Length: 286
Image 1 (cartoon, one colour):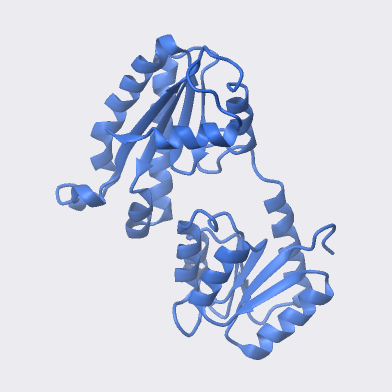
Image 2 (tube, rainbow, N blue to C red; image 1 turned 90 degrees about the vertical axis):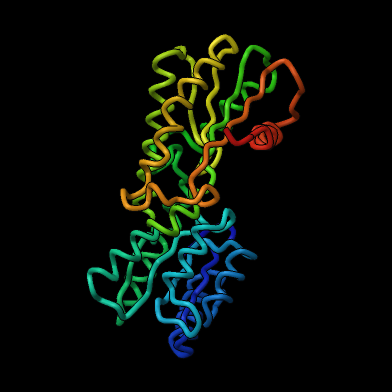
């Protein structure tokens, strides 16, 4: 049973009887429960309440569960919410589709309610223990990045670079999560190799956000490091796309590299959030 503040579940199920049964069962277990019968309602409710887990049916009256999952994963507020597909679909391809979209689990009907309860409990526990590294690139994320940025607030001899991939969401929608993850891994490797060539032992690379990398280095190395990274990144963008699409990718729909830079010793930042905001605002297309 959840401890302290009750965890919240969003149940997205158009079978009224099943939705009511799940609602009653999980409330008895101590959870707060919201229910939605329509996919669009589920997306709106998830953005408003940020549940701890979503139980998501695939067959819905308006948009299907896959599309609900895509939209939740594409939005900053909801992309980290764990999603468990709850469905009658049993084909391996259906399961792979759900997992590729970022679902953490896949439960077929009919199901054992006790097993479902354990899956929900374990999913929430894993989500609470937020990872310190990005699951795609294995670079520092979240608390580790905040800790390093925090160390800059009262010092001067540093430069923070931000390198962002604009248009990655559109790319993901067209080519899938696997292809988008491959892009993130490739970009992280190119930046890391640039640091290896001209950086110092104390230089740092991590994620400001999913498609935003931050590099912390010494002012004497910052410009050369950025140049080396861009020399690798700029010509590589077209190769992220399948061969048959490389020549016809419209500039507006192509992944673009944006960069920004903040130097220590200039403006003072009251906290890490203000420093991160300033970094993101410093970005300009290259």
